[in-house]
Image (cartoon, rainbow, N blue to C red; front, side):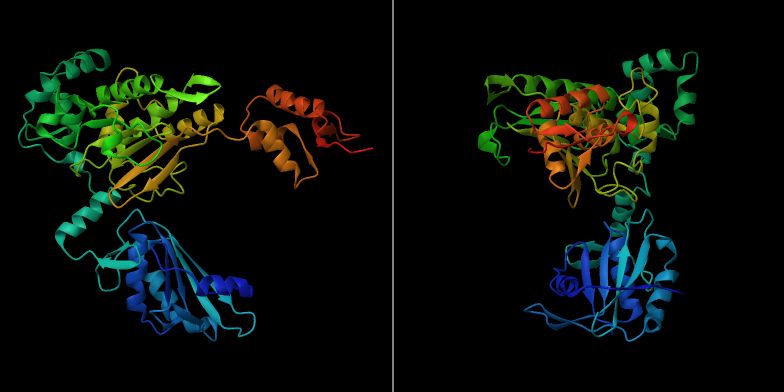
Length: 461
C-alpha cells in the first residue's frame, strides 16, 4: 500500500496534543495492539464517526500531558493498516492520513472513520459504540437489538401489535377512504397481506400507524405528538408553560396535518416587539416538512411521543431515535436512509401526501427559511433523539452581506451576489446593487459589460 504523508505546522501539532478526547476524537499511543485499536474504530463507525490519532503518548493522564511519539517509517504502521482494511463491513467508510512532524520527521496516523450503515465488529467479533470519550461493548442480545434499530437495520415498523386484529385496519374509515381514492375494487385483506402490513392476521406497527383510527390505544406513549407553548425565549420550564400541553393523536397522516395546523395557529397568536407589535412568521413549508420527517422517520421502538416546543423566538421539534443508517447531522441534506420504509412508501400513496417529494423534505424546509431571510434550521443528535430547532432570527440584509463580501474581494457579479445572499431572481439582485450604488458604496467595474459586468467598491476621487 502506498500512502502519502503531509508535513504539518507546529501550531497544528499543538492543536492535536491539546485536543479533548470526546465523542468525535481519540488519541492513542503507537504501542496499542491492532486488536485494541479495532475496538475504537468499531465504536466510531457504529456511532457518529470520528478521528483517531495514532502515535500520541499520554505522559500524565490526570493532567492531560501528551507528547508526539510517531512511527519512524510509514511501513511501521502496516499492521494497523492491514487490520483496518480487514474490517469488512467498514468498506470505504474510512480515510488514513500520515502526518509528518516538521522536525522529528516521524509520523502520526490520522484515521478518519465515517458513520457506517452496517454494524462494524472489532477483531474480537464484538461491536462497540462510542459514548462521549468511552467505547462501550455491545455484548448482549438486547444491546445488539438496540444498535440494529438505531441503524435502521431492523425495522420496528414490521413488529406485530399483539393487542390488535386485522379488522382494526379493514373496518376503519381511514382505510376505506384510502382504498376508494387510491386502489378501488381490490379486496382489502388481500391488499394488506400483499403490503406486509400484517402477520398471520395481526397488524404490524406500520399497519396500525397508517390505518387504525386510534393507534394510541395499542401503541401508547409512542404514537402521538405533544405540543407545548412556553412563554419564554430561554429553556423549557414547566412554570413558563402558557397552557396545558396539547396531545395530537390519530393515524400518522392525520397527525402530520393536525400538528402543522395547530403549530401554525399558536404561532399566529403570538406577537413580538418590532415596529409596534407584529406577527411572527415561519414558513408553513418548513413546519410541514420538519414535522413530516419527525413522524415518518422516528424510531417507534422508543416509548416516547414526538414533542413540538414553541418558544417566543424558536420552535423545537424532537423526534425519538438517532439518525438511521449512515446519515449524520453533517450529511443529512444529501443522504437518505429510511428507518420506516413501509410508512414512507405507503403514506406517499395517500391523496395530497405529506411527503410529496420523497427525500427532498429537509431541503425544502431550509430553502423556505432562506427565502424569508431567516436562519436555516439547526439539527442536533442526542443519545436517543434528534432535535430540529427553527429559530426566528433574521439573516443580515442582502446589502450587508454584499458589503461584508467586498471587504475581502475586489469585485462581485450578479451570480456571486445571488449565491451569497440566497436571492433567486437576477433582477432582485440587480436592485440590491442599485441601492448600494445610490448610497455611494458600489460602482460598476470599468470596461466590464454584458455577462462580464461586475461591481466594485466606490473609489474616492
